[in-house]
Length: 357
Image 1 (cartoon, helix red, strand yellow):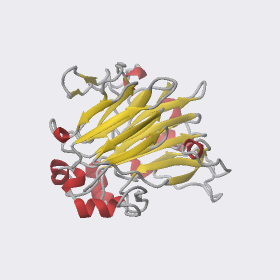
Image 2 (cartoon, one colour):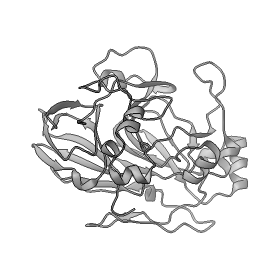
Image 3 (tube, one colour):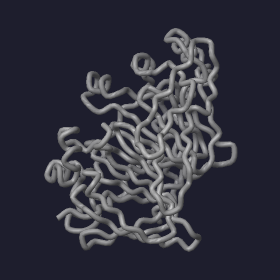
Image 4 (cartoon, one colour):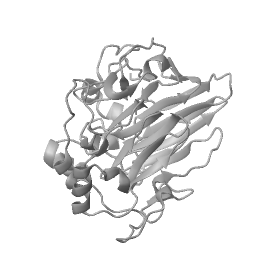
């Protein structure tokens, strides 16, 4: 019988990484620049390893292959041909990440034989003055893109967003973007490690050598359009309305890239809904019961703030800030109890939408 799964720490050192992720997991900080904690991963090169219960020591990739629809859900299993479709991370950017883009499913399959990468960000902490890039601030041609990458002025045509804790951004495949220094965030994405690095500020990597750029590969992956209005999430439905692109020469209101949502205590608030994943925010100060069988999907809980216990199938797991849990699709009910002396425990809840897509 499957049960809520916790995983061993899976840190990734990066040239831009900071020193927040290890202390967040009650480990001593050191000089190693840790940029990412891969919380739930079936990527073959960096698989999550179970650390609790009877399946301790097993990796998520082999569990997905063995348990199939019991872990994924019947519809998810059929739709993704038995592959685990998501990867979730915590990201600590002490310095700016490269300007980059990810290919969509079609291009990624053709070039790399894997999923594309659509993703979302929830900002957990941000230093004063912190910002990130998402999208262009005006329509850009292929020629202008190549010219600006060559002369180092690409950031001049990117939409730069000041950020604070609680901000949410949706990054569809094809949207040029970069997380900048001073930001700690949670990321939900398709299960892919394909990134086209466009501009890296002429800095050396951890090995002292310039990092590889993928300027030409990115050329066909980038969406050069700019939306003229925000995508909206209809109340009572989970259907996103796609915004119309700007015409050439028009300047964008860059706020179109930021995702709006309302806070509602003790209620799952949809943040991002698309064909690849649904992400909801749970801000809770009392125990609650979730009936999960109706989703026919695994569910991932990422703890953003506070502490809680999750009980299911006779197993109790504890989540603290910066830790995550995978609830297999065969688990029909869970009971969640927050334990935050300061008041509210915040969780991200992620699963696959089997009703609208």
